[in-house]
Every structure is written in C-alpha cells, then in structure tokens.
Image 1 (tube, rainbow, N blue to C red):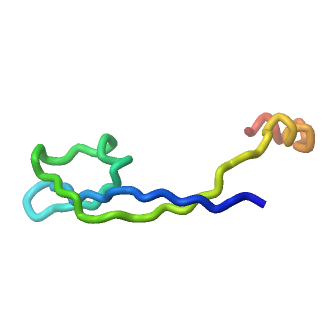
Image 2: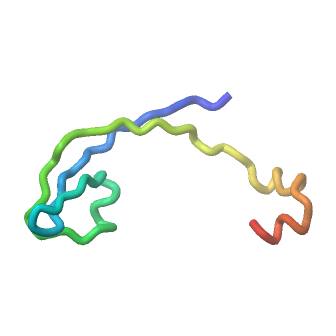
Length: 71
C-alpha cells in the first residue's frame, strides 16, 4: 500500500485592486498577476498526497485498444 506523504506550503495574501484581495499558495504566485508590493505571508497549509507509482506501460496491456486512443 502507498504511503501518505505531506508537505507544508506557505500561503500569501495578495492585492488585486482596491479592497480586492486573494490568498495564493507559494506554488501559485507566478500564475497570477497582482499589484506589485501588495503581498504578505499569511500562514501555512499542509498538503497530503500519495505518490503515483503506477507503471503506465504495464497498465496499457489491460486497456482495450479503442480506449488507448483517448488517453
């Protein structure tokens, strides 16, 4: 069985305009345009995940050919 892992991610409050704020994770900061200088750290969150260890080549033997075209 796969092991559940976790990591801590910093969260930031960012300003988009007058009285318009959002909360972004450290991984999302570069995907959004916010006002320069309007950013402050506002906490952390813990993300839990299970690593994908699937062997997709092995699994493809069990997927019908017509369904493989959709993958």
